[in-house]
Image (cartoon, rainbow over all chains, first blue to last red; front, top):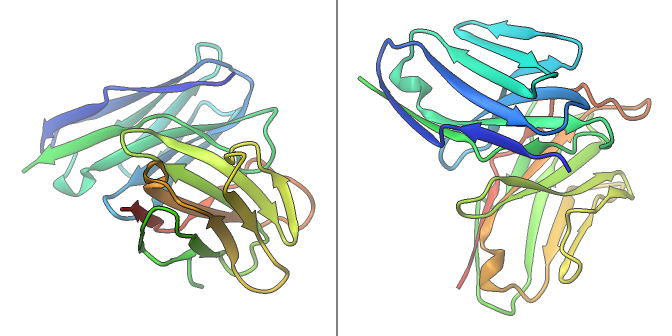
Amino acid sequence: KQEVTQIPAALSVPEGENLVLNCSFTDSAIYNLQWFRQDPGKGLTSLLLIQSSQREQTSGRLNASLDKSSGRSTLYIAASQPGDSATYLCAVIPIYNQGGKLIFGQGTELSVKP
Amino acid sequence: NAGVMQNPRHLVRRRGQEARLRCSPMKGHSHVYWYRQLPEEGLKFMVYLQKENIIDESGMPKERFSAEFPKEGPSILRIQQVVRGDSAAYFCASSWNDRGLTTNEKLFFGSGTQLSVL
């Protein structure tokens, strides 16, 4: 059974700092891995999607890496800003799942202090 | 092109009442997923529907919960005889696919319905 874990559960950093969020999964048989952002009272916004055959994806100040063999992914945020404060969720689609049946981690709550 | 629309945003029910949550997928999307986020827990898959069909309901509680996605109109998640433990945020997501399942697509999520059971 696939399980997704995110560490740390919460993180507080000063503005401008580079930071790394971690995600681990127990079964390497996945189609893809996604990083989402969740703001309080709002839905989820997909940030980056990494296919199983890829190693990383980049979008602006965000870079996500995937190491299937070790069951790990990291989300790197460069030059953090207060607007980056949110909960970041990691999710995988196992090969045996249909469609968009995602398995989510518990999330990392990020606070960037001005 | 409007995103995934969920209503109501907030729903308050007393124990024993029925809750009906609505989800209109993005235009052109024919696949809908429902997820539940309980307090202090992560998002959990509930059900996956295509128009007029339930594809996977392995995450749905066996009793009191049902879902539909009719040919016309929004998808409905229905909870009968609600209990306090049903209090949670319910999210709907949609994707486009007319040639079978593609698991490499991004899902687009709605803003959720916060259900509170008194």
